[in-house]
Amino acid sequence: MDFYEALNSRKTVREFEQEDVPDKVIERVLAAAFRAPTNDHMRDWHFIVVKDRSDAAKLLDIIPKGISDEEMDALIRDWNLNDSLQQACYRSAVPKQYRMLFDAAAIIIPLLRQKTDILHPENLSHLNGFASIWCSIENLFLAAAAEGYGCNLRVPLGNEAEYARDILGFPEDYLMPCFIGIGRPKQNLTPVCQKEINLRERIHKDRF
Ligand SMILES: Cc1cc2nc3c(=O)[nH]c(=O)nc-3n(C[C@H](O)[C@H](O)[C@H](O)COP(=O)(O)O)c2cc1C
Image 1 (spheres, rainbow, N blue to C red):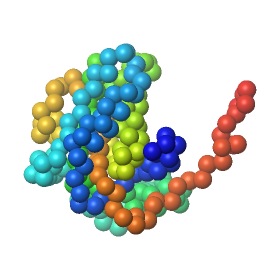
Image 2: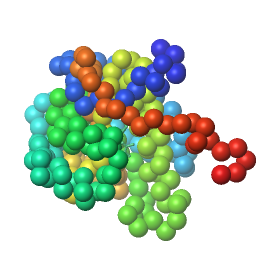
Image 3: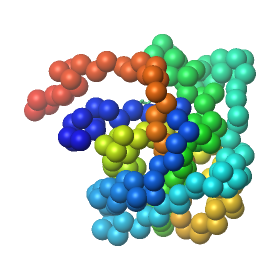
C-alpha cells in the first residue's frame, strides 16, 4: 500500500472482527515502531503483546465496562468538551473503552524507560523520551493500517498503569503511555465524524 493510502486509511478502530492478527504481522508493525525517531538514540522501548484471553481479561479488569448517561453528561461537562463533534466522539468512544481492547486480537503495551519524574519535568527535554515513544506508536498505527488492520489506544486513568505493571511484571523504571488494541476492523463501521481542517488557515507563511 502506498504511504498516503495507509496514512489516509488510518483511523481509530474500536470494534473488531473475531480474527487473529498473525504474529508475523505484529512483528512487522513493531519493527515499524522501532523506525521512529528517538530523543537519545537508544530506542529503549519494549512492547508486551497480550493475546491470551484470560491474560487479557486480567489486564483489563480494572477498566470500566460501561458508563451511565448521567456519568457521560458529567464527563462532558467536567472535561469542558464544548464542541459538538468532540462530544459525539466521546459519546461513541467512552462506552467502548473495555470492549475495544478486550475484543482486539492483541493488546500491545508499549514501554519506555523514563529516567526522571514524568509528572514533574524540569524542562521540555525531560519529556523527550515520552514524545519519542508516541512517534513509535504512530508508526505502529500506520504500519497496521498498511497491513489492513486497525488500532485503538487508551491512556491509563487512575491506577490502571500501576495495576498493569503488577499484572505484566514490567520494571519500575519503565512507563506505559497507553494500552493499544489491534485487530481486523469490523466491516461496515460508521466512522466517527472528524473535524474539518482548513489547511490554509493552519499553515502560516513566514509568520503567524
Ligand atoms: C494522546 C492520545 C490519547 C488518546 N486517548 C484515547 C483514549 O484514552 N481512549 C480512546 O478511545 N481514544 C483515545 N485516543 C484516540 C482519539 O480519540 C482519536 O485519535 C481521535 O478522536 C481522532 O480520531 P482518529 O484516530 O480516528 O483519526 C487518543 C489519541 C491520542 C493521540
